[in-house]
Length: 131
Image (cartoon, rainbow, N blue to C red; front, side, top):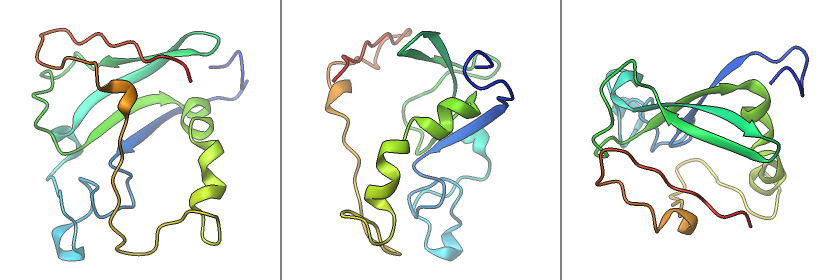
């Protein structure tokens, strides 16, 4: 994304959130719920901007495709995309914000925008409408 940030570098983002108990990287010995031996066990993808205001997430074809039974996902992306995509939420979940998580709080994430997506097909193509 050097057209936006001249010194942009490659980055990686994890889901479930890397520092959470639901993360594939959180060891069971620390009460992790979905530990995996390696990040390679997660859905692998990469994100790229197609045009202003539109980014796409693609399957990393260097490894086997997802089974959709994975407990985690990780995506390679521009550092600019990674740091700005959730910027509007940072104050909301930081300690003292209106909404925040405390250690060991349970949480769920729901993306109704993806409810129409069909992951049973060999190629998953899903357009998420803009808010």
